[in-house]
Image (cartoon, rainbow, N blue to C red; front, side, top):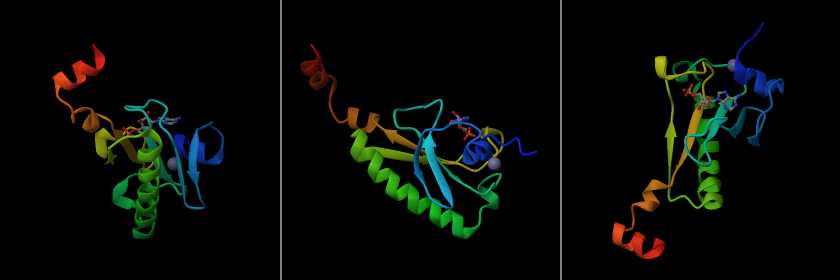
Length: 121
Ligand code: AMP
Ligand code: ZN
């Protein structure tokens, strides 16, 4: 029996908030977001981690990441975005996933404390 939580999401046995899907990959909202707009992209086929991905699926996942990055930044008004892949002890779910993490702090750091204070006071 396959106990993988992300395989269960793909099969619809566990609910998810899907934002993109095709025959090879699924993108959905992270259940415990680090930032607003934290999205995960996963292959529909079970690969444990990045070291065993096929070249074909790597290319496809990064093409979808490219598309979703533009969409997230536009819709959420973030000025940057970080892509993260965890591995080994740092990887909690052993089904490969690419984290998309919009960066709002880059935008926030464009202004000085005084400029922000003028806005907020
Ligand atoms: P990692 O440490 O890279 O394996 O991160 C696993 C990520 O999966 C974490 O950010 C979790 O919040 C997320 N996660 C775990 N279970 C679910 C779920 N059922 N739906 C959405 N995201 C999940
Ligand atoms: Zn899986």
